Length: 241
Image (cartoon, rainbow, N blue to C red; front, side):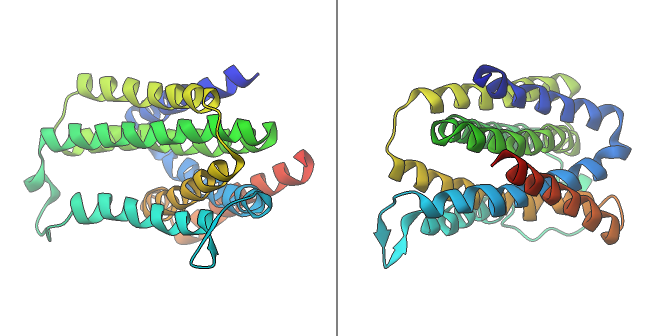
């Protein structure tokens, strides 16, 4: 069962990429649901889990909560300060750069590996925690697959480059999941990593996933999709224990 959970992100990534190439009109629905799933995972699964796990304190604050802020700032710095530091005006085609598209796809591979680690470490916490994280990672990796297509296309890349990067993004979380479950770590470390993962989810959901849905439909429809995603995770918490 664990092995099946670990490989699901691969198929999610490939499906996201394929739909972006073939059925883009449905992406706003899936993006909204994915964003809600991530918020629900944070609120109903990860935060309650972190609260009861033993973890050290720093500045009178549990380290996992400091990790939430640190992860958010780190990813914001990578995405906004390093990746898009200059002010851009004029049509986006004027900034098309195939190398930038490929490098952006490689960065997503790194993100996907972090997602996979979260699955493996979550399965060490409990099967329920691991299962909830898998759902969120599958949602996030679906969006990653779509983002790879959009990124490479926007910078004038080829379909061959798209599929190579999609395969890399699909394999990365699977490797991360098996590595994460093979490494034995303390409960305190698990709590700190959970905090880091929460920070990543907050950034990705609010910076990429939910805005990605809003770009393609009305605010009300996006709200409904996000709320449904949150409800799914609440029901999973209620019936899964």
